[in-house]
Length: 354
Ligand code: PEP
Ligand code: MN
Image (cartoon, rainbow, N blue to C red; front, top):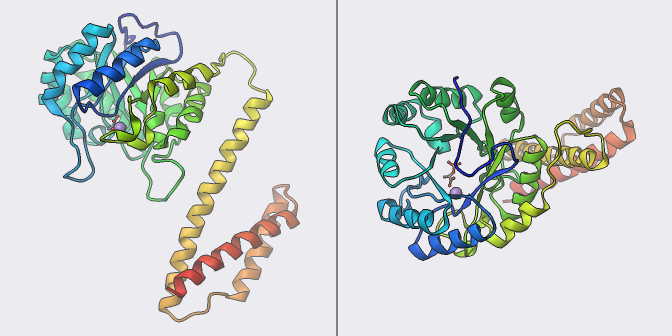
């Protein structure tokens, strides 16, 4: 890919993080303007708002549409912030360009669709505007890169990526799994490509925004795109994950921006790794419980007892030996698996007695 710097007016792209903030959706003129003025007062320079919203099911709020374009123009005129929105069709591109948007992004459902991406690339051919491409909903790095290549082939050189996490069937603490190794691999392949992280859509809840911002910064990503709303609880979309401009400011002020060159062998770094390991342990445990429940269902249908003694002893023995090989005390491993097994049995009991 032939890449150039994003070159956003008034934004120093070497100063991490570049921040894009604003509501998930433009809802009313008051909501847009009030959020924008508060964000501008906190020093935010790029304002986001979804005008067209891709929704999983019909009947929900699908964005205010064209009606919201003049509101965004007002944001630009009154606050001097740059304005950004999501485009999913050539019609959106046409309308966004004539409304004077400074930055466009392509959503996760669109970047997963090569036909849609090609249509968008064709509609942007010859236009000089920076475009950010969200990762596709599924964890497919090639598809993500392919989406960006289509734009690049159409002459879009000011490109960036947005890491917004990947959907998963398993219930996890995240709305979309971060799978950090994917943006890390993207960085390895295209060191010049700016990468933003979207903690709002990864976390899906307010409490996760701050730690995810910190993780993104610790991985040396370039920017953050964060959903912020003047009254998050009343938001028409993604209410749980939006934060007020005040909270956003607080989160940004608390961020520790580490120097890439500095040694990372300090306690805070190691504790973060422990947190990450613990998160993975919890995710994997929840996956194991799901399988246990499926087994419970099978046992119920086949009139089998829950406890199959042979199987239980085999698990304890095998896992104990595995643990010993990895330098973990076999008693410790045995205790952990006893507790896990106990919980599996409880979950299966619930299914059988339903
Ligand atoms: C959004 O940014 O509001 C959005 C719809 O995100 P995504 O495409 O990542 O789901
Ligand atoms: Mn959203």
